[in-house]
Image (tube, chains in turn orange, green):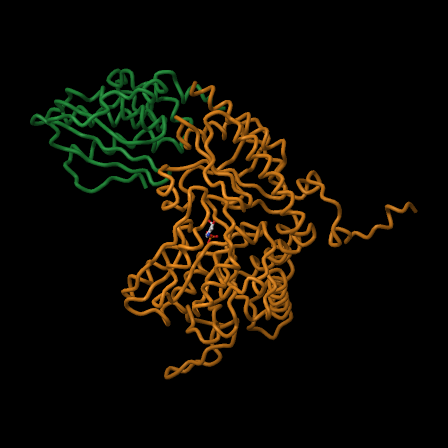
Length: 421
Length: 152
Ligand SMILES: Cc1ncc(COP(=O)(O)O)c(C=O)c1O
């Protein structure tokens, strides 16, 4: 028996050297051909592709475990409940929450932020109070707060950014006032790629006793996130941007805050007893999980986290950082290209515009070469306004992307220039 | 497989770079604004109506090559036409870019004239909204609609 054969099958879990080709082999969709070209998928900030292990976990759930959780004494219900709670523990470990009861499953980042706005926000905001956000937020970290403010007669304040797309920390600090009741900020901007100095922002807000809600949708896939180290009060993210399925996401919240909050939706699972006169709510985390949850989605999310842990978040981040640097250099050197978002600290996202050519036309021409990028305002219209542009082209990277794909993008942009010459 | 050159025909590229009637006519008495939230295209169409006739027309705004060229060539094709004639041209144009132009055998494509260069759009369904934004805006201006038209 050779030495190689003795390597256990689970060796992946103890992290092998980074091999992008082997990783690409884990993602069935990457073999797709588009308009006669191999797919070059650079729209990962919108949603990432899913490895075989995630797809299999969902199939396995329906083939072997499907039953409603927390409700039955029968075998399958117990298996499903156990797997569901195991997944919660996996998520807890992944973001280093103190307790698994601080992990609430939601439909995604959007629902998680709405949950906080409609529970914590409704309970703590009054007329004249303020919510502070930043100028680089995704619509899902703007609109829920606007809706809250509208209902309460409160005000939405916006911390400005500079021309590189970096938060002006001093201005942010100045905007933290006596009336500020909540701070809501992106950890990483989806339109610009900026990584915010979150730890310092949280410290500034906490110095005034203000809790911080973090939109981590673009951070969790690319950075190692430790909610305790950040000292974030709430932290929201989506499974589908981190190799997991759609329809499942997470709200982390500090136990004391969650415990004191009123529930979000009413229904089954979130109660401990119901009479027509009075209902007592269930304990955490169930208080915030009304109704039958997306159990298959949770199984897929667990598999996605296992997959990321198998590679190692540091290796994922390192590879993506190399890609971003390479792409920044190669695209930045093309005539007529202007990069939008040139912060010193960035993750995974390269937004740009091309002189004289609208992003929508660029998107169509790239698509003809099999290259998938996002063109548009990226659900961040205020960011577009800040840079006086209607839209950008955005290439965003994941663990399975390669430098050869960035070369394809560069060739694609050259082709755009030819068409518009 | 759809070909890029079918979409980005020389005439279209040329109009997108040097749009015609890119102005607000002095005698403007109708106007409307059109917006495509998907890509941020935004145009205003101005009309100087003389009774039922389009005496002068112009447009301003920003958008992709397809939407801009379409707006430019639209102004050329409907200038001097009546409201009903303009409406009929739009109907034909719409059938052309959605790939339905041959369904109705009785239809005479001749009225489209130069607008026929937009036939390639039918191979790129996501770009139909780009090609028709200015036309929807024109319809709104003709109807004297005050509300901004949106393609969504
Ligand atoms: C920064 C950011 N926040 C929030 C969201 C919303 O996430 P979801 O649509 O998964 O709820 C996204 C993704 O579109 C995002 O990029």
